[in-house]
Image (cartoon, one colour):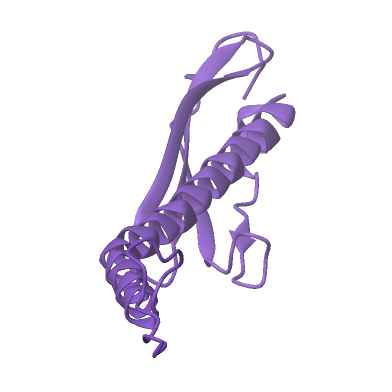
Length: 144
């Protein structure tokens, strides 16, 4: 008499078992957790680089403003410093610009004699006091 035998699992079954899928998900999660601090550090450095780039641009604009008014030494010293609030487009970083104007050239017999004065624009964070950018130059003035 013929008796049917139970069908045995063949050695070449294709596909993954549920256990293999769960193990692979756990391994991928551990790798992602290991790389998470790198991602966070990269985002922080990107924000810091953007704040520095904005600070340099702001300092350069202060120098350009002083150069535009460089007809006389008193016009350069009267150039107002710019204060940028945290609501500006500098990624929420509150920036303050301060300027330092050197001594005017010594008076000469001619009131229109050209000379140079040192000019420095410094940008700091008002929340931490950290200096982000300093731009120094000499500005040509035509008279006192």
